[in-house]
Amino acid sequence: MTSTKGLEGVVATQSAISSIIDDTLTYVGYDIDDLAEHASFEEVIYLLWHKRLPKADELLELKQQLADNMAVPQEVLNHFKTYPIDKVHPMTALRTSVSILGLYDENAEDMSVEANYLKAIQLQAKMSTLITAFARVRKGQDPIAPKSDLSYAANFLYMLNGTVPEAIEEEAFNKALVLHADHELNASTFTARVCVATLSDVYSGVVAALGALKGPLHGGANEQVMKMLMEIGSVENVEPYINNKLNNKEKIMGFGHRVYEKGDPRAKHLREMSQKLTKIRGEEKWYEMSIKIDEIVTGQKNLPPNVDFYSASVYHSLNIDHDLFTPVFAVSRVSGWLAHILEQYSNNRLIRPRAEYIGPGMQKYVPVEKR
Ligand SMILES: CC(=O)SCCNC(=O)CCNC(=O)[C@H](O)C(C)(C)COP(=O)(O)OP(=O)(O)OC[C@H]1O[C@@H](n2cnc3c(N)ncnc32)[C@H](O)[C@@H]1OP(=O)(O)O
Ligand SMILES: O=C([O-])CC(=O)C(=O)O
Image 1 (cartoon, rainbow, N blue to C red):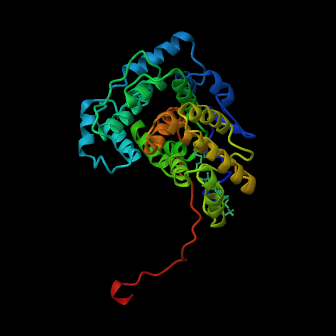
Image 2: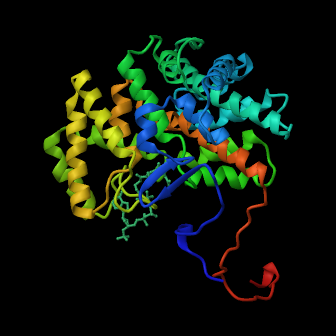
Image 3: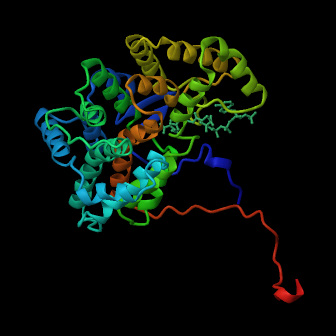
């Protein structure tokens, strides 16, 4: 029995949700470039969950269901008071509060198809509310109730900042949500599928996935990219900073990918948005620094940027706190996790691979006093 480090190249399941073939990403057969230009995030949620685009009335119904379910039980918000709120990372808070949300869902253990679909709506709707409420409460501000006439993207920014976003901000955030929604068998999605393949519940699957997304080799990279941009501080400092890191064999966050060879098709959309939004904010330096880093890392290491690289300057330009970048990723990716969780339940088998044992051979037990 031999193993492959990091399961590289291992095909672990079948799925009809998204595919990456020859560096092209599709959701249910729709090219990500097409969806990024034209689709609302709500349409993408429907697409991932139903494996087809919604008709007008179906889209309206989903939007209504999301709007109707955005409110979070007060008991769940009350738990924030028990968190070390000025110290806790928002991803840790989100992971915990999604788990607490499960406590207050009386159907949490109901494994029927209908109940699980309802949980998907609940979780998709409430994740935005949980993150934005947490972000406000930790600053001593009151949470803002969602507006039922706003899109999912606009509602998130509204609940975060207290003002209805401008059209360009809503458009950019919607596009970011579309681009992050699903990505085949990435680490967090795989985690969710492994968890629910034991026939554990939907909340457990999402909590497990949040834990996997948090790491800097996965979704946590977007926050680290912004940290790097802040550390560098100016375009002139880019070259010495990056060369020093590369010479020390340190990783540059937001570059490289396990699956893409020529590049991540999502990055160009985020690069365009970064250029537009940093210009509007009068903070072009974040874009200019990003472009310079991209030139050096891609030029020297042949490692193109991934989805996390330009999303950092996009979220910064949308006035989102830097430690909320990964929770924002989660708000989008939960749609993909939920699609995979429902798909796993629909044709389940326990996921239990083997390990290649590399420890000592057979040994005889020696009593403690003789060791
Ligand atoms: C949404 C997402 O999850 S996208 C990914 C977000 N993560 C990041 O941006 C973190 C930075 N990138 C990385 O750590 C990696 O490229 C990953 C985790 C994305 C992919 O990892 P893997 O496929 O396991 O590649 P691995 O880490 O083995 O790297 C292969 C080689 O490329 C190098 N490399 C990979 N990424 C980078 C990077 N960002 N900067 C510098 N060198 C890198 C490694 O050092 C390694 O070099 P070596 O063979 O000389 O030792
Ligand atoms: O697919 C991966 O390994 C990571 C990634 O880009 C994502 O989850 O969006």
